[in-house]
Image: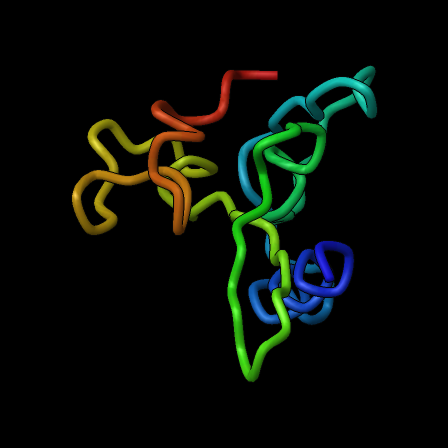
Length: 100
């Protein structure tokens, strides 16, 4: 479920791969590059704690936490609710994306 949620949320935020943001570095293990695209799942996909459980009708899904736009825009503090940079687990990203 994490791959599906990752791609669906990225598609919802940037359906035509045309929403650009200041370049941000890919985390390890993908590392070695910068992306100017709004890829909301990218900053968290390499983390072991990037999934959260959601139980519906007796089945547990594990969608991925997502980075929020204020992190890509390097807003300090974040304009998101409670100054968050990630959702739903706001403790995963606590600052904007580093300069690439």
